[in-house]
Image (cartoon, rainbow, N blue to C red; front, side):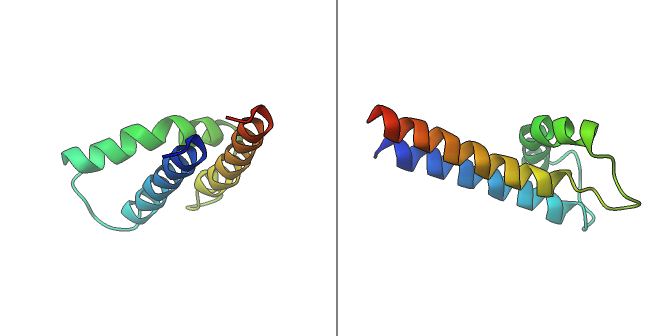
Length: 87
């Protein structure tokens, strides 16, 4: 498996985890369930970072949307560096 593929898969998995967290915010769930705790613990560092700069508007939290854009930008930068280095 190439390095590009590994990076693409890692970013895709993280994006899906953020998407799952968005869905969890709309449904009732047990916050102590190990799988749900995993999703929250993995995604909170990124979402918490963006929440410091983008406060919620009413009941809407736009940090996941900004995180999606930032992750895509970071993925593109990393892939361009890898391609430039010929890895």
